[in-house]
Length: 269
Image 1 (cartoon, rainbow, N blue to C red):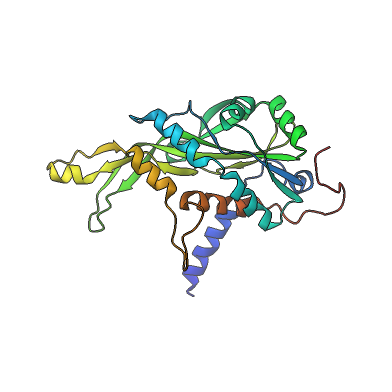
Image 2 (image 1 turned 135 degrees about the vertical axis):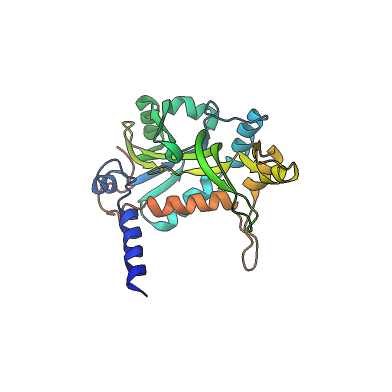
């Protein structure tokens, strides 16, 4: 390996290490969050979703999200980073107003994300009822932010840099007090689903340089969310978008080996 390549890889590793998902000291998180409760995936229906079939987008996300917390719990359990990981049952539409007290946009340009504030009373109620030390909440939300997207024609050097509407994913681990102990994403990112595309073909056939931004059809979005990868012997059980998201969560939600001593059931007291 060349010296230049080694330096580049080292810089990339340093950049990655500089990102911190933890909002409290990692050791404190490790000692405090022994039993993690995972909520059903939530949708912020009042976020910025600009589409001719706006309500259809909300309904589609809720439909595709349904039950996905179960494989997420299984994947987190496999990592053995917690004393226990439990699925928390509930109606996502009712859980959202119980837990969320507000939101705001943070960051600039392509790094804009939506951050959430939480209702301590609602968080405490769920944590006490489920006997967990922390609650993982995942919220899908719409955001507008500038981005550069290239023509899919590999022989073309064309791109359109403008504001696009995307569905992003926000996630947090909440302590029973409502304090955010861990938060995703870091430094922008968090994209889950494109709602629009630049129509380079339309511009080409209409002999114009004015590339229009068009909405992806509801049917097309549904096929994207349900798309599964084909393994060596069979098709994956979990749709690709969710699989990739959950695999990332399992890697960045590992504070270290938890002590098996102390409270026998690992539950919040």
